[in-house]
Image 1 (cartoon, rainbow, N blue to C red):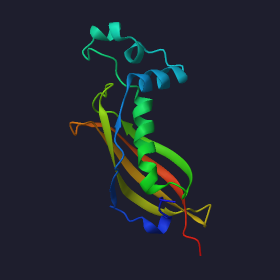
Image 2 (image 1 turned 180 degrees about the vertical axis):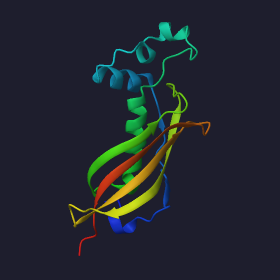
Image 3 (image 1 turned 60 degrees about the vertical axis):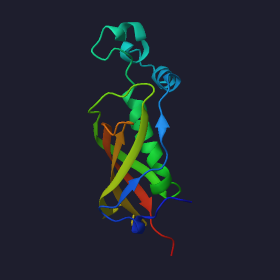
Length: 150
């Protein structure tokens, strides 16, 4: 189990996650159609030629999913009880098919769970960068975490 227990996190701790992911057109079309999103900006290359972007944008839900998913192995894999929420989700620059994501995470906050004394809450900042180190996504994620076994 590579995830960390609540007590193993420190505020300010950072993770440069080793997994990188190049986004394919198939990734974008599958996520977009699985979620019943009919937006032309993700699915219609001909329409997008006439826009400021010139080509389809990667669905922001895919960006968010990869931001969190790529972070799991080094942080919460096997030690998370549940995600409690995601806040301040932003996509400051567009992401396109063919771009490669890398993810950084930072521990922002640690606190005891008032309702579950056997658990603690970790607040992460996740940041996604493309292959040119341009920030393309960011969010805060609150995770309910297991404490170390006695």
